[in-house]
Length: 129
Image: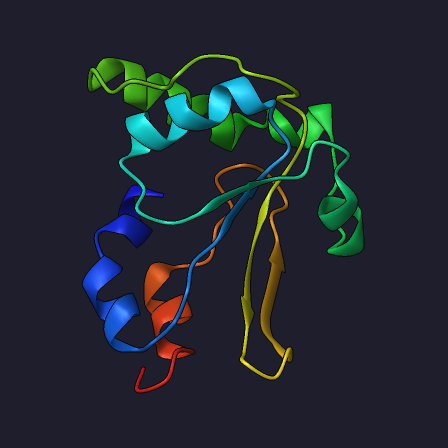
């Protein structure tokens, strides 16, 4: 999220919106927003309707892949906060760009938690990008 937040002004200039969707419980929402300093709306999908509609898997094997464990080890060594376990750690996310006409311009269900679309790719899909 930090990479996307860093481009907030560019996203606004493109007249685009970023929405974060989480399956987490409501009590974690304000904490997450404060920790990430995200200026974007956070929608809760506790029943994971959108997660299923967009093909986002839950997988213990992929969620705790070597790549993800390496990410947490590096974060710990660098003194970065990882915010602990706040729900189903096996649920995978994804990145999607939907244009004003409802056409999906990017659909990237994450194979594992560190598998995210480069912000530059997302920005290139925005008007003027």
